[in-house]
Image (cartoon, rainbow, N blue to C red; front, side, top):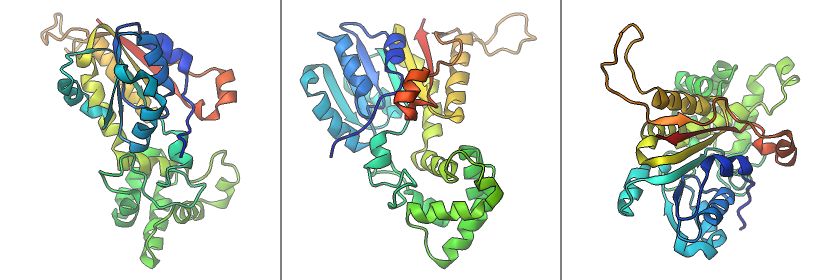
Length: 312
């Protein structure tokens, strides 16, 4: 099965990542390899791409798409949070570029069979790495009503989280919720009719997003990675992150600001006593968004937010 995906903001990523011949770069989320292939072109002839993805489908696809770059790539079926271990395995102290594309791929939505979309009836799995973690079905059928409400509210920013959680708990008493269609219909039934008629997106969009985030521990892992990202860059090395919703973007923005500021002393102190120095220079003072032309050609890119920084 072919791996379908269109990379978001490819020109902007190339510009901010600034890969050059002989450099070592990391693509922490290979996906369909749209970004990875361009990185390879830019680091030839002696550069190295370290490609990481927790979805085995993406790794299998990368082996085909990047076959002509075999001597310049190393592929890992893993999560980018384990980059320190991967670099240690390769005997590499630091790299010249790191890219994270946090979006879900078109392949995962349409062809994975793991329940990422409510538009086809599939098992409620949502694990990007099928070898680890709990499937979404287990969360839906076992979490307490209050926990479900918090999940939908905090991760999905869902206005009707309380009502949806109640409907789920009521429905699962009759039969287990196992498929995407089951869950999507429960969500629809929980939202008042006058609200449904005015919604521009599918009523289940935020619930499915929240579940996917929880199943894959996406925010937790992103936050942990951003804490240590600068440590893995050489001076002048670049970090480029593509996020797709406000929770991800907030983590990236706040951590980059902290790394650029350095000092954590209270403003009232006349002198710095913490001793922490700035580690990066933010390259994107404001978040960068896709052009109208790109959104027209690739609607999935419409919510993309790009932030980038350079190691001092």
